[in-house]
Image 1 (cartoon, rainbow, N blue to C red):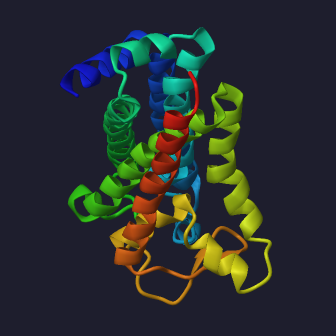
Image 2 (cartoon, helix red, strand yellow):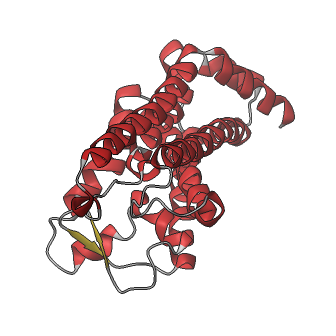
Length: 266
């Protein structure tokens, strides 16, 4: 297993796509900072009586989908690039136990995604709060210690997305198919669910991957429902149930991927 981990770590850090993905993650931090910088310029130009109505979206949450998608793509590429170039056969010769190979690949992908996700979330939080300074902007007054549980869970969700991407890559054996699947999970399905008739739209929205980190942290409180976006109202899951649901996003896709990986020819 250790040899497999070393091999997968070498693969993931020796391909150019990894650094492109990390550059996109860094770009998300820069974009978030630019949004807040522009917002503060607008705030400073407002008359005092209008400033109390001024709002700025917390950028660590606003830019998170971009980071999740980037690392989800990394998970897809970790396996589909081997299928595309035929190197998966060499990997299986070196590690005939397919479960071990997939586990090692998942560990390497998750480690990179977890570090990148946490770095992006905390960097965005710290940079944007520094730009806000002592201005009385709602949702921008909490310290990093107060926000740490939510920030950690936001970063964790990035690692979950990378593992889901890996599972989709195994299932489709196609880079395009895997990426489309990740996009559907993160954006298309959550958006489409909001148009379902009550109560199905509200119930299903609560278990969508993008909505789980806040619920685990309890950041949305214990109300029976909360507004998310301009239309959706989702019931808030207790943190324990939200955590179980997030774990299911890891276990179920990887378990299905492991079955497919064992049964298919390379």
